[in-house]
Every structure is written in C-alpha cells, then in structure tokens.
Length: 102
Image (tube, rainbow, N blue to C red; front, side, top):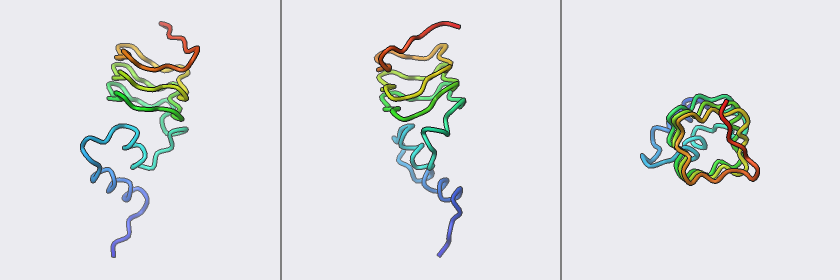
C-alpha cells in the first residue's frame, strides 16, 4: 500500500475531481481553510459563478475580472477586495455592503 503525505493526498484528490467541480468544492478537496487560505489571494479572472462563499475570508483578495455572477457573498469577509472589471450581475451581497471606487 502506498501512503501519501498530506500535500500529495490533496493533489491526488484534485486530479480526480470532476471536471465540473466548482471553486468551493475544489477548495474543500484541497483541504484549504476558507477562513484563512484566501486572505489576500490572487483570484484574478476566477470563475466563481453561482458559488456560496459563506464563511470565506477574502479580505484583500484580488478579484479583478472575476466572474461573480449569481454568487452568494453573504457571510463572506470582503474588506479591501479588488473588484475592477469583475462581473457582479446577480451577486448576493451582505446587508449593508458598500461598493466604492478607490
């Protein structure tokens, strides 16, 4: 029997992930912590369509050009995210969220 270390096990799970697996499913397969692993992340152009990002800390993340159409952002931390050119039609924002140009 071959035993994989944690990193190799995560890589093997990702290789066998269904092609249609979304961002949240892939993050889980890779054993990433939504509350820590994406702070300040480079997610430029990332396809997040229709995902539920409740519990994700995206503080300071670069989401320029990302596809956030119909993405549920309630419960996600979004302080200081970069959204230039992001597709946000139908995104569900936290109550009181303010989008401003910087």
